[in-house]
Image 1 (cartoon, rainbow, N blue to C red):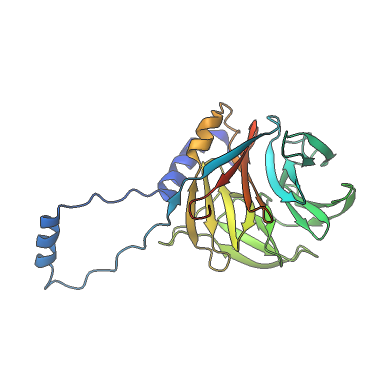
Image 2 (cartoon, helix red, strand yellow; image 1 turned 120 degrees about the horizontal axis):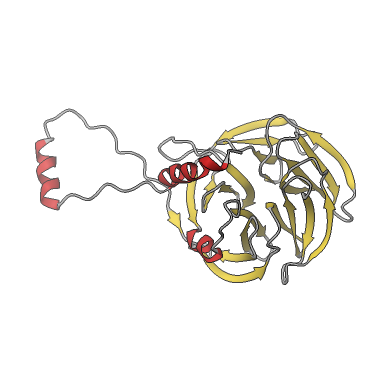
Length: 284
């Protein structure tokens, strides 16, 4: 991760990338005149690809969330939320009751490690660490350690598509990993329709055949085509971030969980007192 002094610059740069301003429209008469003047001119270059649509989520419910939880990973399974938290000496995995945010059980990640993303695979929770290069395996039923995987580079977010684990590391590249060995199977470059890449991909969730990814230090979630890496939608959560009104620079949007059976989408952030259930336009 980058230092605090660079965060405003990063957020501004990503805002410009994710929400490019549209060129001002010319009067119709001017457009017709321009068209007439260029009829005999050399062929014009093809227009730039249209940016992905930007949608605003609608909040349908709010639930308490531990304001001291430095949320790094979030998932829903069998009626409960599972969460991984960060910060050295305070990182852990948790089972959390949705209705009141109560932590039902937890297990500590080694004190010297900084916890990151979380995924579930065949009865085991897998939790990343930021810079230790270790992914811990935990039995879902009792949170007992089951072993660990090792990987190169940083660990940020983790999810799965039913066949591979998908890892983010803060770059524009997602890594698809063998769930049994953590060996890298393939990579995916995440990009806008015009080819620009988007870095700082963080917490991940696989939803309806697409990857949702938080963009660190911004109020945006990206919908990504897992076959091409194309960003097909930008989810603008600025109103929700504004509702939280956080003053801590670390209290950013980060945490996506999908209840496939109930068709419910949950989002929260680091150090947020609230977890939101939201719907997206077209999904209601």
